[in-house]
Image 1 (cartoon, helix red, strand yellow):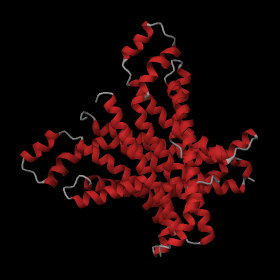
Image 2 (image 1 turned 90 degrees about the horizontal axis):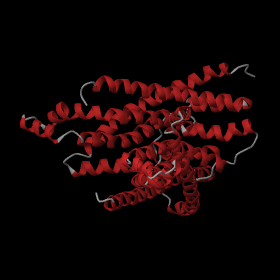
Image 3 (image 1 turned 120 degrees about the horizontal axis):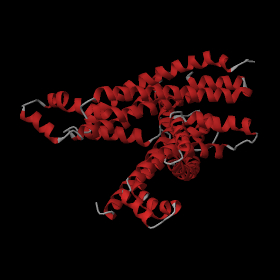
Image 4 (image 1 turned 180 degrees about the vertical axis):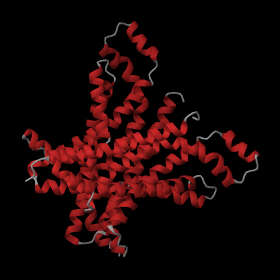
Length: 217
Length: 220
């Protein structure tokens, strides 16, 4: 029997490590997917627009847990067996990428029309216009909503518990099974650890935002 | 690899679980509508300690996972209070409470959009605080935010699978139970995905139409 809640910390921190890794990898995938889908939905080619729109609708329309189950439990039946980490990162990354694509799209559309026209007047190629003129301005607008999404993403990593990945939530529930009478301490500790992680991220994003937008927006 | 007979076998079970899922969603939505409004009002209170405590609670609930909150309600509250909570109530309260913090922000934006003159007019008419809220402010603050509330209803619908963790038998857990008997996972999980997609897609179209109609009504 543990003598104090301090004794739970090493196990929980081991789980927190997995949580952080899953969150980082899925955040990277989510940002890449968000830019590809967000830009793709503004493409001149209808086929690109349609494919991206279908991706966004499918991943926003079904819930994250269903996607995770599908990738991990259903895909093996058609011969694709993913390791837990890959299934978790794919599900979370693609899910948040779909939501993020709307952020990218609306931020690009919010850049004033004069900026597009100025780039055309300067004889820039379309990719130059996007890379040098539009995206630098649009990405500042994307920062606050991306920060909110990042907090949501960290919270959603707790779902990997369902595919028995040894993340923070999973470790806590194993501890709880072993020491039922300590349930409340363990769960409160778990809530606090998530709260600290989420708060650190949202404070970090706000500081970054203040630094980057100083004198600009 | 896609077995239609198996699909026809599974589908009725999933559809009856869908009814349960919708029922859970609606109950949680009612909880979050009421608690969200109370939180929004408390966060605006002129009694500063109440406002700060409320904002703190909102921050805490928003920055921790729904899954862990539901575990807390289901496993920890019975130990603390000595009453066990059935999975249904723990799930509805958990989901409702979690999204009430989001809805309180929506209410706040609606309340702040009411012109200041309306408050002054209510003061000029000698309305009490309760009358001001009931007769003047809320009737103007709430209609514009109805589409946003509708979107949160869809979001909550898609969060219900999380409640399967506390053995609340909704669609996901039903599919899981089917799989554990038949050992065929592909069809049930795909069907659950299709059902979620179909319903949330139709619902989002309805919300869009509602939004257009309401903009027309307000002369936009």
